[in-house]
Length: 101
Image (cartoon, rainbow, N blue to C red; front, side):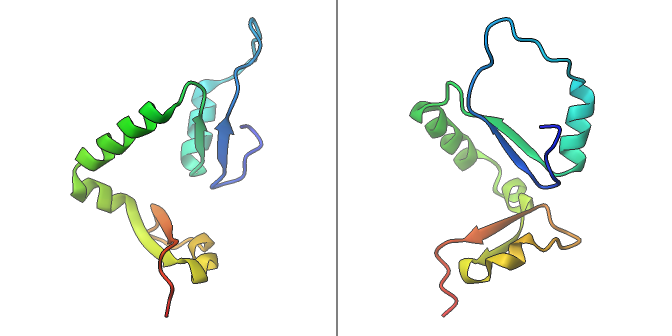
């Protein structure tokens, strides 16, 4: 996590051994992740039920709030544009269904 590039995504897919301790400044890690627009997530103990709960939560979320999170949508055939940061970007979505024809 300390070596992630800006806009990096880190997936934690395991659990460290019992009793393993790492010196970690959580506040500094949080600042670096937030300011670098990084994502850190884990999949331990996540199963279909958890994804279904997340789907229900997003479906019930305020649509105005959700729409403000996605600032641009780029069709798949123009995917490189999604990686060119624009001044107002929050999150950019690559539309896998858009054909561009």
